Length: 163
Image 1 (cartoon, rainbow, N blue to C red):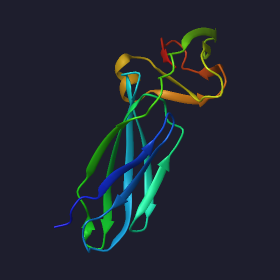
Image 2 (cartoon, rainbow, N blue to C red; image 1 turned 90 degrees about the horizontal axis):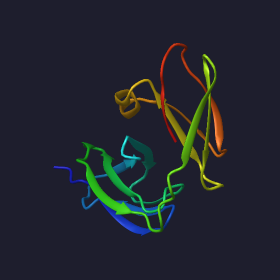
Image 3 (cartoon, one colour; image 1 turned 90 degrees about the vertical axis):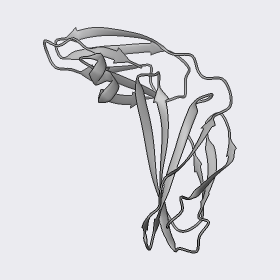
């Protein structure tokens, strides 16, 4: 039986998490697959996937949000097959940034100008869809470090926007 890998949180800060991966077996490990999950504004679960080569590994994941719960899951790729998943949870330190205040204005039938207030030098995600279900499951999206963006939409549809 292949055991799950051990995920150990080495350190964390406002915008990063460092963790180590190892196996407690003599089975040869060729690498790991790691998923980092977090929930965006209770509407959308986000995920970042890392594919790591080698047996032992210390990883640092940066560009995270302060005071946000993250779930890290990992499995090992071995000579005998994939291991079961293991999980750890960690909350980044600091104070979570305030939610931006969004304004959306139609420019014409197929373009909407979105603008918002919020801190500088961060990355914003703009999510939009024609229903709450679509906004939750599979919204269209874009990212920017600016405080405005023009998005192209289908004519004769109503859209919901989230930043």
